[in-house]
Length: 483
Ligand code: GLN
Image: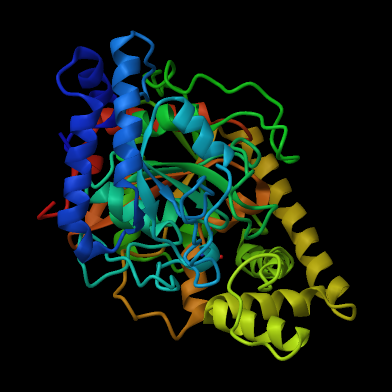
């Protein structure tokens, strides 16, 4: 059953080939057997899953099911889930049980989906390898010595290892696309504001966005359809109807204008990764797309701008974790200052502390204009570069990440090299655009991602292009050994 896609599972449920309870038990059994090697889940919610599955079976029997009803999924542990621990990968929230569901979680539950559990992640979504998690690193199912990417590394590994048909992730600078690339799955970061951020623990509020992680573009389309929508409880939510992401999946690509970013293709791009991207570009050409070289003259500033804006916002967002309002509280504080200091020192890990310090510095009175305002101006230039590019092309293509999965521990002492993992993904968040990663031909037996970037709210087109590629190739069908 776990070889089937969400679309196939949905057809099987409707036809009565198996029940949601059987399907759910099958995945819970796989998690029990295979996850001890991978560590992709922080919490498994077996009892609740079976209750949800029974309710889904009743809905199917009553003829009231939609395409997501009865399908199991895993949620990144950044989404609040009522009555269930939501740790955000941190010791700070080790004992936090949310009193409410995030909107994305509630939307998918209303559609009849079954939550298997909460997936491991970099602490507060800060990282590109899943090694900053307080709950230990996640291992890549393609090679358990390697990282799965991050910060949505648990969701990526779980989907790649067939421990869940689909999962949710969040992406602030690449955290859906980069782990999707490193584990050989399909991941989509929607336009900023497309999915509600209500109940999604904030890292950098102007960049964070939830999205689907799946094995195929078709499955990502189905899941996004259930996640997306306006939410009055999120003031940055887009007041705009959700597109039909499925009906246009098969539209031919004849005449599609695809832009290749000159700065990405020139800039130290690894030869094997370039070769892999070229194979996907050749397939686009074969289907009638026109390939156009474009320039994003300010894109080389995106990592620097991001590492001012994101830490600045995080230093503000994470101030609520003080041992009083939220989070871990130290033992026997002798005064208020001691309480704050020790609770925060004990509760946060090294990377989170590094970001809070950088962000606090960038926002301090003497440096605000020099760093924060400057970074915001650069951000506007990058968004303008994309606007100009989308006058010439319909989608933009590039590699997703600069290499394949690296070994656990290889980059932990070198934060800048870790930050450069997102060199191709970060500009998309700064500009608020949708971006997607799909599997490209592998390099040395390890997955490689190909990125498609769309104009604002053009998710349906990205999914269409990805689906057309996946209809004619089998790069997305590769399965890690032993799963
Ligand atoms: N790797 C980037 C960071 O550590 C992006 C993380 C993310 O998208 N959540 O900030």
